[in-house]
Length: 338
Image 1 (cartoon, rainbow, N blue to C red):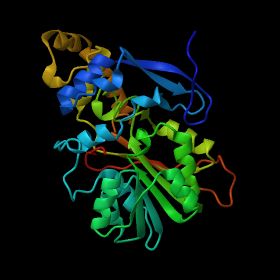
Image 2: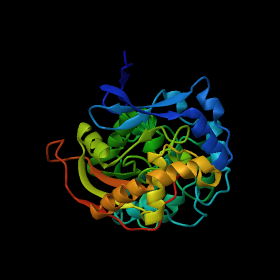
Image 3: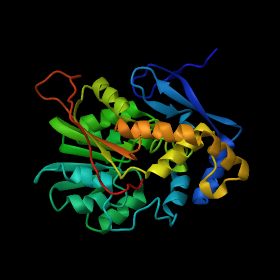
């Protein structure tokens, strides 16, 4: 009998919808990033992905798979420009949020780290940040920024409805208890205020078909979001969807075909680790991948965008559960994840 797992969004039932081979994921972390994450998958051969039946949100279980402080100490120490943008470069999700802030608004940056987003936002708004990492907050304060080391729930209890806008960029995919996190965000924003969220676009996986990319799997990320899941999650919490934007320059055609063919052939190795048999399997399914990729492009599918951002509004004078319909791609440079 299939195990019934509780959805971290609605509390309703969730069922297994996919699985990953742990050995392949461990190998990708070691090859791509030089990180050993085997201890996160002890006695596990396959990693289960679950689907919330109410919202369509997909998440990995159990919650112990999520990265802890020791993992992120190693992650942030990586000198890899494909993971961390050089200091001073503005990320696409930050630009999305900055373009939607109004002068004089009171803004909270959730997951502020060392304060890079706040450094840009302070030129326009009254901004402060929170993060559970004390060292990041210390660095932000050293740079003259208003950063507090706190959990979202504790801060929401101490600052109810204190902000016009709450921004959480590249944070939600790290959170297992989505319901508690969203309750905290909603508690912090005033009625009529906005919540701006940015996450990796999983339609169906990161940037389309990069299923085993370590950038988007445990222990780094614990949840897979797409526009549909974000909209249904917003509706569940009584928020209005004002805008949806897609970030990052889509992959070139050949890369998109390669990712699709690799997925069809069930090849999980990184390109620099492919063996002759892998190339042969990919070659066999490449004609199918070409046809499917052309179809996606003709239909202007959003699956090839790396990130999706939403602007949610806490209603003040209209019923909850009424969604907006503004949905538009936002063409920017290639995004990097936090």
